[in-house]
Length: 405
Ligand SMILES: [Zn+2]
Image (cartoon, rainbow, N blue to C red; front, side, top):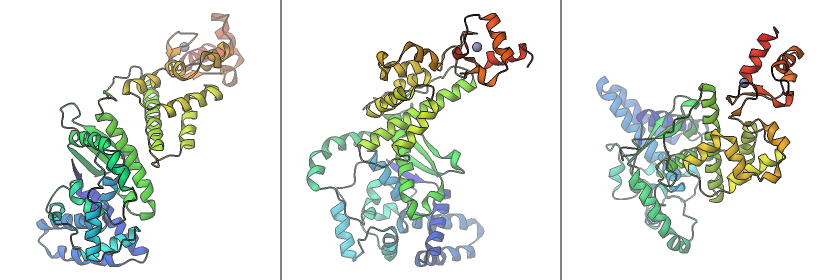
């Protein structure tokens, strides 16, 4: 697997990181950067871009080690093997160089200022090369000793190693690009069908700026790579599914699907002891918003049920997102919920009592928002209808027009 960073990302991330260091009183990298970058302006104009790219790459990858966030995230989700094999070599190399082993980012970058390659195949990661493979650069990562104890990595490392090898071979390339804004951030797996899958990750360069925000950056990358991993996992069986319905229905289903998938990602990360982008309670509040029509007790039950589930397929998540009934039947015992409560929930996708069309936008309590005349107009057509039966937003609108309000 190759990890390729776009020149735009490397440029902005390195620049922001260096400026942050400079503002925090660490000038050495900043000065070094300028000593390399400033003379580039003397070059013929046509040569400058490439020269800047080289300097940015040196700083992004070697000096500031910003690519390590990506490699660590790939490792954490099991898309590349944990680079333990090289730990000892790296530590030896570090010791041989007299490098400081303090794990703090600032120390890390200042100790690397020697600019001495730590390993002998490091020229492969040099700026002449467009790509960095994880095994090439891993020696540079290991400034802080791995805490994992040797025994467990030997025993249980074997199985998971094979699995990650599988993924590593399945995904040919990871392209990390600069996102233009927050909405642009995210990941996708391209060429999934053609058999040469490639992860495209878009991330804000500003996330690389502040070492204190490194945990957030890592959590973001891990969250995204988990999705990408699911997409190439035959057991998850991802498909570009057609979601039926009008745009607002599609949006709702898509949003719920994303939520359920994130929840599934969070739960697995929590079991692995990895910090997610969102704490569990915050994810529950998000869940809460989408399912507030389900009574509290059942809502908790559904959330718990999903959280505990070890494995989902894409199809299961999508059907739960499409049809609340399938979500309820999976996690809520019939005895838990009275017929009356169930009627009142107005399951998304269940028919409107007035027009009988599958309904995603319910008006739960028309009385609270409509004139009395509207309620009367409905009851003229549907004598058995009660306010608590609700209706779709379109029907309510029609009756509002009819009642002339
Ligand atoms: Zn209706």
